[in-house]
Image 1 (cartoon, rainbow, N blue to C red):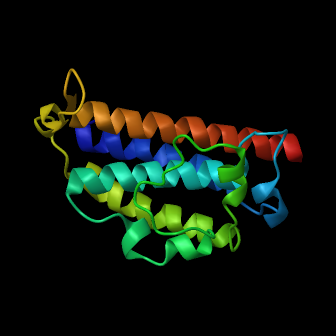
Image 2: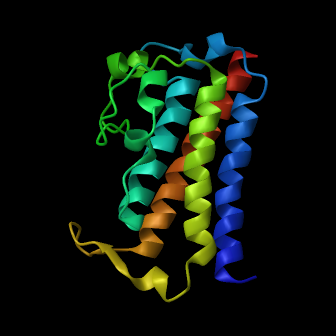
Length: 167
């Protein structure tokens, strides 16, 4: 298996988990919290998508789809490119008001498509490229991609767990 196939396969696992969390989901469960201050299914999928959109747009030196598209309106938010969910409190989680399951799935799909295109053309040599010098040591493309995919898999798993908890 070459590096592209490996990266695309790993990224595809996220989509599978997102589908598992959202398929035939009662829209009322998107904003249902398992307890005070806990994240919701809708917030978890929104957050993992926002992180992927934010980080991959930086890697591509492109605008975020959150900013260039009409996505924020469907979540009851402003198109703030820095709002990815990091540091959100219970009020911020509750502020995510989705137009429905489809908009969440659609936003993830467009972000995932752009990410997959990047992964499909990434070479082993590309992975060594430094993409963020704000950290010590500087962050390589490999480390950034691992960070994004790890975060996405973790949150998709949490959303899937919540779905099971509510069933």
